[in-house]
Structure formats: structure tokens, C-alpha cells
Image (cartoon, rainbow, N blue to C red; front, side):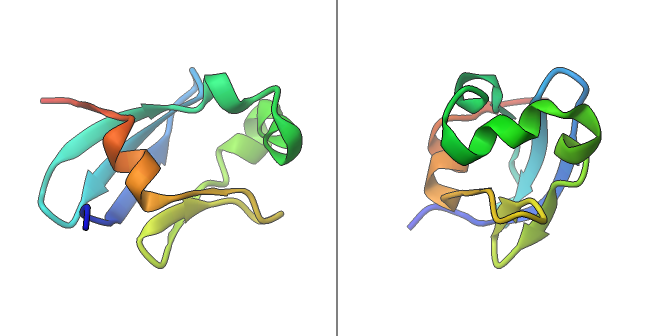
Length: 79
């Protein structure tokens, strides 16, 4: 099982800065998902900024979320 998200900071470029339970800091690019289904609402920058941590993953008020495994496996490690 992959680590879970403990902190999220949404960036202006549709990326999420994430901290995980194992102490790693990673960046996840949301832009490939912005033209897909419910994720199109994230194009509105003020809404994208409302990302929050919930139960080890990231979610938005209208129900968009990502699997914590996706966030970990498809993100890149940052210093």
C-alpha cells in the first residue's frame, strides 16, 4: 500500500504540491485530467484552489477526488 496524503498546496499551473505519510514531497500534474468528465470544473482556478486533504487523498467540494495511489504513483518527487 502506498503512503497517503497529509498536506496539499494547489499551484497556479494546475499542479498539486503534496506531502505524504512517508515524509516525501511530490508534485502531481492535474492538467491531463481537466478535459475529462467531472474534472472539467477544476479549470476554474478559484475552484481548483479549494483542494483539501480528506481521508489520505485530495478532494474538492463538488466531489472530485483522486485515488491516493494515483497521486503517489503518478507524481514526481521534489526537493
